[in-house]
Image (tube, rainbow, N blue to C red; front, side):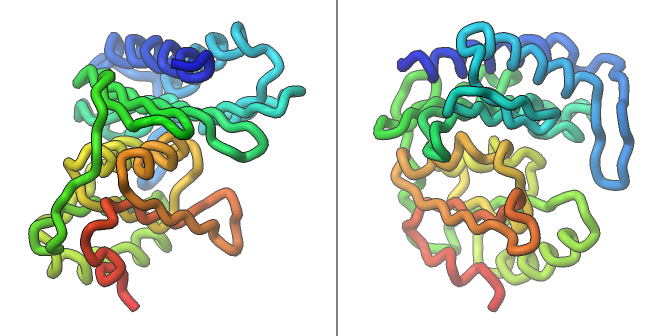
Length: 251
C-alpha cells in the first residue's frame, strides 16, 4: 500500500476499535434531531482519526463531518468517523468509518471499515478494489428482476418526500429494495456485488468519497451530481453498470 492508503487504513482501524469498544454502551448525545442523532462519540472518533493523520502529514487539510481544518499542503483528507450514527445509537451493528484523501480534487486513496464484521475495503487510484486484501468486483446480474437496490434517505422532510416516489417506482422493478442506514457500506456493497445499485438524492462527500474510487475500480459505474443550490450536497447513483438501472429513476 502507498503511504496515504496505509495512513488511512491505520486511522480507520483505530477508529473502529474505539467504536467497537463503545457499542451498545451508554452514549452522550450532543443533539437529537427529528431524523438524525449527533453523538459525542462522533466528535471523539474524528479527533482520533485527525490526530493519526496529522501526526504523519501535519500540513494536510481535513474535511470531516465533525469539522474541517485548513492546511498548507495540496492534500485533503475526507472523513466520516461514524457513518450510520442512528444505527449505532440503537444498537444496530451496521455502520462504518470511511476515509479518503485527494490532491487538487483528485481522489488518491480510500478506505471503508466495518468494525463489527471486521471488513475493510481499500482502493488506490489506478489500483484494484479490495476487501480484506482480496480483489472484488461488482455483481454480474443483468436482469433488474434479479437485482437488489439500496436507496438512501437524507435527514430532511423535503428529501424524504422526494425519495418515496422514487422508491415506489423502483421497488416494482427489482428483486428487493433496501434502506440500510449507512451510505459508506451501501457503496462498498455495490463494489462487492452484494448490492447491484445504490441510489441517494442528497448525500455529503464524506459519506461516499472512498466509494467514488472503489466502485469504478471494481468494474462499476458512479454518477455524482452536485445540487444546484448547494454544491456540497450531491445526488449519487452507484451501480454495477450491468442492468438498466436508469429505468429505476422516475421521469
